[in-house]
Length: 332
Ligand SMILES: NC(=O)c1ccc[n+]([C@@H]2O[C@H](COP(=O)([O-])OP(=O)(O)OC[C@H]3O[C@@H](n4cnc5c(N)ncnc54)[C@H](O)[C@@H]3O)[C@@H](O)[C@H]2O)c1
Image (cartoon, rainbow, N blue to C red):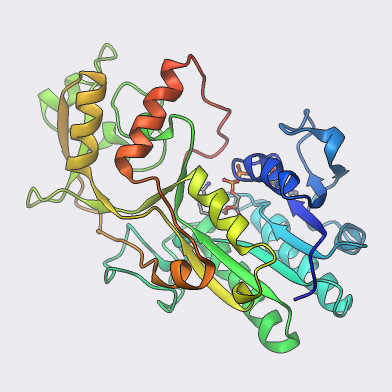
């Protein structure tokens, strides 16, 4: 692969984009960032070329990729029936087709994928799930969109030899997300929504008067649920391993934490760190899952280091330093 010097990044103000941009700059890349948000972008705009625009706008993609060597396509809307066709599907198609039309100019197109494409959580799955597991989105527009985006990428790779890399992120945790997810007194981050699983008076009491407890999701037989998430730091590491890596071309990779966790381990650790009780919540709809990292470790050199204990410890440290959570538009 010829050396990549300039990269178009979409979704620069998002959770992943705003943390990836400084690392790409440190690595010496020239960046052009598609910016959709009207407010000030959360990265150093003096060091990047900012282009304001909306995905799916005719003619935008061609302008965005002019003189670029690579694309990192992160921009996305989530559970929005009214927006996802234009932003995600038309937007991804426009970028892929502009890259195709530019001949050999684009040396790598990195698409943000998601483990949602494998229908995790809501359906029984073999574990570990590997990259060959078929697309099978869970209900809703987000997972459906991730399957359609990946399918377009696969076809542009197959039909036109476009140098695609898909990074399938697990649920990304930064800042104090894990505490916002797994305690009763928090605003709530992701699923399940614990209050909906509170059936006993004891469980319900934790949602009255802001009493705090660490939440342990269990199956109806009492067995703790198993899940696989990923720290933002490991996501950034995975992206950096993929950029400009010839071995990454033509492949999809799981980007998840170093291991899956069970909620008993998570809730016990939060309970000890915060000095609060741990409470079980039965979720009859949940199905365990974990991802195989064999391919991403061996081909990308991906080496994640944030297991669930380290994710919790970082979240506690984040709060102890007096930090406040960034605005989160989609709590999951
Ligand atoms: N955060 C996660 O847990 C997670 C997990 C798996 C996969 N992913 C994928 O990674 C990518 C980045 O995720 P994130 O969490 O940083 O997303 P985010 O929601 O934090 O940011 C999305 C970005 O897309 C931009 N955007 C939205 N609509 C747009 C439009 N119409 N035109 C141009 N830009 C638009 C927003 O301005 C924002 O910068 C997405 O493709 C997402 O599906 C994220």
